[in-house]
Image (cartoon, rainbow, N blue to C red; front, side, top):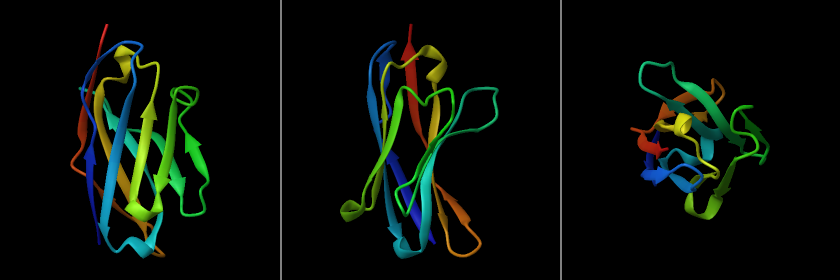
Length: 117
């Protein structure tokens, strides 16, 4: 089991930047990949980005040119650098970790990002 805690969410103006952090604890060695989803009010949770244990990254088309995912293995932390933020980026951002042979997913409680126009 992996325990995840997100931080870094805030209110920011359009065009601004934020960096989200996700600190992992527990069964760290079994993590295959970590990443981020977001959920806006009234919408389904959507994939944003992921990074594998090998360092490969994937992004949603809507954020590919603006967001960057990275990790610090020494701190067991994954980051999401978000630039050129838009009001439509407003959502609760959730960190996840996929672990073990079955890629079981653990979720963090989420952090609120609000982008004002």
